[in-house]
Picture 1 (tube, rainbow, N blue to C red):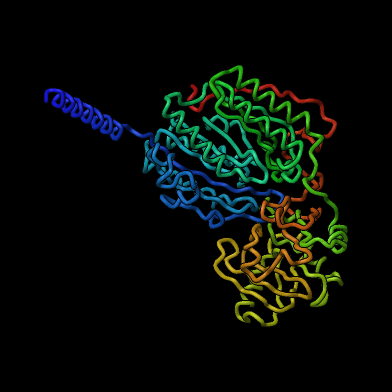
Picture 2 (cartoon, one colour; picture 1 turned 180 degrees about the horizontal axis):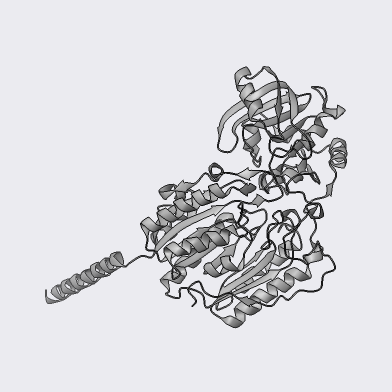
Length: 522
């Protein structure tokens, strides 16, 4: 009986202890972390302008929809008190109007001011936004956010590897990382890494890293030459994990940079952050030197040639679909998306003149007036109306498209309305607003079967995974537009020179690490 009594007392004490522990856990103050950011890749060589509506800004709890790793039952969601403010992400396009930028910034600052104070900020950007009258929009954005949240708040920045890292952006970012794959199959993984690094540093009390090494690398190459699917990009990016595994290193990143904007910040950058000065310095300089050493090895990820030669190859092939990348006006790189030059050539070819000619899908050309007329006529009707070249008419003017409407689909988040018109043996997709075609469902939802089509022409550079897996064969056509792959034709005036490959015989640059001060440095 006495023994039972003792066990009972012990049980009560243990239970009491557990309750106290649970109570302490419940009362433990979680870090308050805000979420904010604007993302777009914008070409200054395109006449297009991007407006506020293009960003499809999400505010408050709707922001969580962008991040699978911050859903209600996720570990990261439980580790902090999250304050989502405004996150806007646009399709790549032209320079952002100053009015759009200032409006989105003002809304972001208002929400940040109303919901502070904060321990941390997850700053989710692309890094290649151009704004009328600003040379470094992301640097300006984070600097103005700092004016609201303060310099002591821990900021973790997540970026696309085709973004640009100015010294100002590097200073106001305590932690910073970017994608390690192109195409960007690791986009969500990279954002999650940025969040995990942020929470870890808040929980362990280490806060801001002691050292941030920044190395500008005078290389400016298009993404189509720097894919991590092939060498040397594959091996270059494979060096990053070994550096991040070293004691005293938090993260390491290589930015290819954005080739289609003419600003002083447009060039490659390497950054390494951490608490061990020697490891951070050595890691940054090793990555920068490795990049420089392989600069002449970068080649296009697929064969490239003229459109005429591309069509000859496609017409002679028995592999379906033969995919042609119409690269110069790629809307996912910043092209206006409405250059008609390629479509004009296709419509003039005799191989596609009759209904039973070589089958071809062209995706796509914007034509709001064409779409409006198609809605009046309906599926099955005959249509004759203009499309394209409303924004970028430098290479060809608007086209008169005459054919049969086979599909009308409304409600797409980007295109809003999609119309398929059959002209000879070509199915042309005409959209109210520009849209990239990256997925099989983008075609099948319109009643098209690209896998059984002879030739598919898509406004894109390197093929994204679904298109790559779908291809029978593939060529990249060197077509004109705001994201011309021949950088020498663009006419840079403001980037820092010398710059490889524009200055192919330049001397070896200084690739020593430059120390970026902390955001709260005196």
